[in-house]
Image (tube, rainbow, N blue to C red; front, top):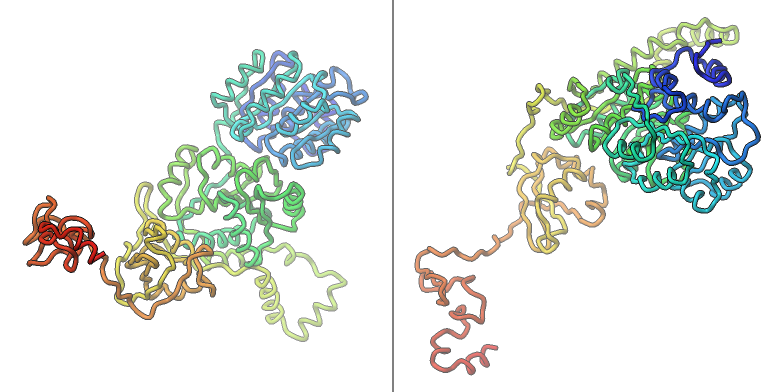
Length: 601
C-alpha cells in the first residue's frame, strides 16, 4: 500500500485501491495549505486531478478527526459545478474517494427529477454536489438546509461566471454559514474571479500549479489547412487517420452539430451528438455510449461539452474555430489527461488561417501547418495498423486448428490473406480525395486561384429571388458556396433583376453544383434554382443621365433634352417639362392647364 502523508487514512486506502501511485501537482499543493483549514483560490487546468484534490482537502474539515461520518442529516460539504455532466462526474469521484468513510453523497442538478432530489435531501446527506440554478431552487424552497455546512467548493468558477451564474453563486454563498471554509478552483483567475474571492473568502491561500504555466504538455496540436468546401471531407480523413478510441468534434452551432452528425452516420462512423436541445436522459445515453465503446465519435457544441469526462479520449477536432484562446484550451483539455497523450486538430479554411494564428498565439501554442491526411496516407496507416494487429501474433487455438487447415486446403494461404484484408478494410469508411493547398510560412498567403468574373463556357442558373427581395451578391455568393459546394472563383457574372437573379457557374463545377443542391433544386428551403438554356438576355436597367451631356441643361426646373428629344428619365410625369405625349410647357403656359390635364388624365 502506498502511504500518502497528510491524507486522511480512509481516503488514502481508496486512492490505493484506485491504482494511484503518485499525486498530481495540484493534489500535492492543496495538502500543503497553511494554516490547515484555510480558504484557497487554486489555478489548475482541466484534467489535472482537481476533483480528487478538493476531495482530499475537504476531508479534515468534514470528518473533524473521525474515521467515518455519523448519521446523515443536513449536509456538511457542498460542491458547486457549472454543468450537469460535471456535477454528476464529481459525484461519482467523491463516492469512490469517500467510500470507506460511509459518506452519503446527493446530487442536485438541472434536468433531473426535483422531487427525487428533495426526498434524498430529506433523508440526509453528508455531501451535496449540484449546479447553481438547481441548488438555488432547493435553498429557496427550504429543501436544502445550509446551516451545518463546514465547507463549500466552487469547481470551474471561471466557467460558472462565463455562463452567467454570478448572482446564483452569490446567493448560495450568502446562504452558507459565515464560518465555513471556501475553496475556489478555476483554470484562470480573472478580475471577476478575484473580486468574488475577495468578497467571500477570508485570507485565501493562492495556489498556482506548474501545470498552469505549461498548457497541456501532453497534447500534440496539429493545424490542417483546407479549401472551405472540403472541410467535412478533411475531418473524415483526420478521424480515419488516427482511428482514436474516442474522438470529440467541436462545432459552433446546433445546426452544424446535426449536419455533421448526419454526414458521419451516412459514412459509417459510430457517432453521437451533444447539443443544448437534447434532454438530460439523451445526453447521458450519448456519453455512456462513448464510455462503453458503442460510439467512437462525439460531435458537440462548446456549452454541451463543458465538464464531460471521456477517459479514452485521444483526439479533439475543431471543425469550427473557437471564439477565443480560452475556449481553444478548454476544448483541447478534454484530451491529454492524467499523463495520457492526445491530439488536438484544427481544421482551418485557407481564408481563416490568420484568425487561427491569432488564437494560437494568444494561447501560447505553436503548430506546424500542413495539409490534412490524404486518402493514400489514410490507407497506408490502415495497412500499418493491420500489420501490427495483436491477433496476428497469437498462436492458433486448438478449437481453430481444424478450420484453419480447411481454409488453407480449400483456398490457399494467399487467398485467405486477401479475404482477411478485404474484411478488415470493408468495416472502415473510405477516405476522401482532398485538394492540396500550398503551405507558406506564418504570415504568408496560401496559393489560390483568383475569383473569375466571367466564363466563356459557363452555365447559367436562375434563382427565384431578385431586387424586390433585397438580393445582393454579398449574401448570394456565400449561400451558393455553402449550399452548392463551390468556391467564389467558380462563380462568374451575377445579374440581379426585380424578380430573379441569374448566376453563371464554371462549366467544370456544374455537375458538382447540381448534385449538392439535390433533386429539389432549392437553396435554404425557399430559393428555387433552375438551369437556363443559355445566357439570359436582359435589357440593362435604365439610368438617369448625369448632367453634362450634349444638349442638356442644368437641373433648374427646365426639361432635359438631348438631340431635340427629352430624356426618357429626365423627370417623372407631373413636373415641369413633361415627356413626349404629355401636356407640354407651352400648353400649360397658354392657360390650358386644367383642360390639358383633364384630357390626358
